[in-house]
Length: 576
Image (cartoon, rainbow, N blue to C red):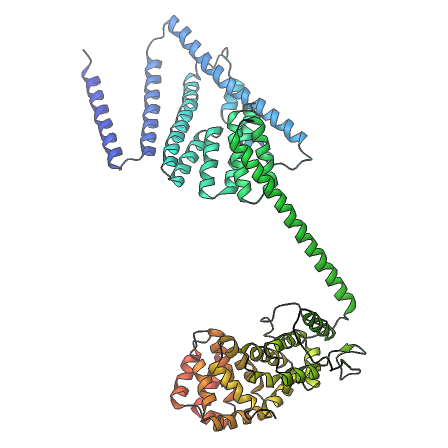
């Protein structure tokens, strides 16, 4: 009959097992908690058994049997340690042979097999050591831990595979990571982790796990032809293909096909990668040719065009392309466009050659800007005028050319293009006028051109600017605001604006103030700048509608990059 204490212990164990099972079913106890409790139980049971073994007398035959068991456990630990040492040596030999080649950086084998506390035990303990009896409990604990870690890794692998089959990739990866924490040399876990990372789109991390599989197989287990290596090579090739590393992926599949020559998916994918590699080489060759051509063109341009020091005005970023440093380049552009089939200029207008400070060059043949624009207006080329205006805008990206275009008297002709029936031509004219207004001398010329009425039109250019603000698209509205805003600091322009508003019944001022409430912050800022400049004239300030004048200071706070000083000054103007 068992003793009463043993019956009570058994009953307590049954109750504890029932509570754990109920907790697992209800979700209040996680598998990790269960493993921890089991580990505590095993440790307590081992301590209790060791205590009992120490208290009871030991018979001679039991001592011999116990020593034999310990010798076997020590032999297992020693075999495991020798395996690690041999793998370290093989890896060191591999690193010394591959020192001049580009390989994955695993400079320390300790990443896979770091020194651990088992080393001291194995190096100091042999079966015949007199300390054997004193170390019995420690040997048992180490051996049990090694077995427990292997079992935990296997459980995590099985659970991760089940989650992977259900499409729960993140949870599956966590299981594989937990298993690798317990047994970092498990090739199956590394291979499975690589596969689930591919599904998650983490291609770089998948490559790392495949690398570990191949290194462990070659150096730790000394089995470079293990079947799992072909699977790892396939998965690494897949990850490298997604990263557009076609050459490396092709080499991986070649190695995988050497391990499994009869694998048809490997062969088909190898053919596809071969085509990808060829296409990538073609693309690189084309890019190289383009780069060489750009370099040659840049060198030729640098050699033919003298260097000039100019200020870079603000507001030029909206014009794409490299700044043109000399108007001779404009002539080349117009010729190229003419060859392409666009009529750009009157062929009867000869190129103009200018010299001295008032010219744009010293003895350089320049295109006849004024003649070109007059010809375009006279023949009503429509949208074909846009390339001429764009070429001039590109040429005026430095102050030197801005002054030159203004001195040739082209500003009035450019202002006339704002009346074009083509919206593209009107927009290009505004872009050129805006570019000219960023230079001081050219801005004065543009202001004078806006003040003078065109001979061929009844309306003044300023009235047309207000009309474009009211009826144009967003780009045209912004350009019209910028042109007038830059010129509105000139007294003649302010007077002309006032006259235009009198003739148009304050339409211009109302149009500008409406743009202050635009949802486009840039548009609202440009409108606020223009109104602020217009308010320097007392007549224009008095013409502001009363309701709009009350709302303007409030709206200004919503305009990005608008200084507080300007807002305060503008509020004072409105209150006068």
